[in-house]
Length: 230
Image (cartoon, rainbow, N blue to C red; front, side, top):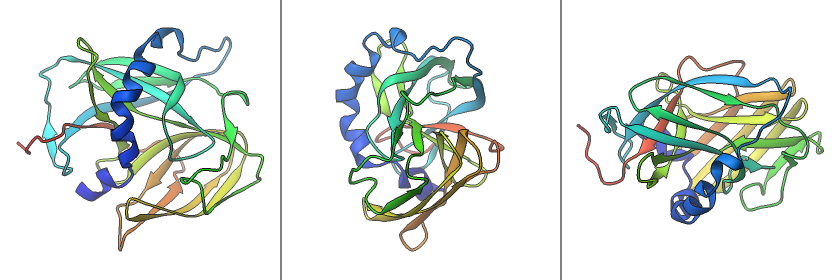
């Protein structure tokens, strides 16, 4: 599972984390998306720690609190997390927790944007709007960042992406970055929140697909740089 944890964690996120820290944390409570009469979607997760080689580290913080931010990435799957922050959760590292995400309207999502992370992709219908939930973790007391978090299914080794789509659609094509090829074979059958899974890389290729429902288990994986496995 080691490679799969690192496969979808693009270097741009780690490099920009310190720069994004101040921007996303400053006044974050006032920038969480709030919608009256919106039906929220709830997802259960748990915290898991890994070193930068992908080895599990067990519980690192001895029950201390962690601040999790869920910024947004509009109009693309890979990209730079930005405001609005969809939600924030303060959790105890060894306890499961619930993430509530609001319904999304067209002003909060976007059609496929033209970036180096979308070159080679085709979305049908082209007017489909999308938004990905980004993941970031901070020490609650110091507000110091760990590293860019990621969502994984520890049972399958898949990377998990939580995304909103405005209508049924398909996303196909290949994106190459960081020495890997990401083969998109995503079919969305209805508007709303969906889980996208990325397989462990095989021959330098990770395949992305839409899951039919909620994964059996979702871990919010936090990378602790330079730590050895226990």
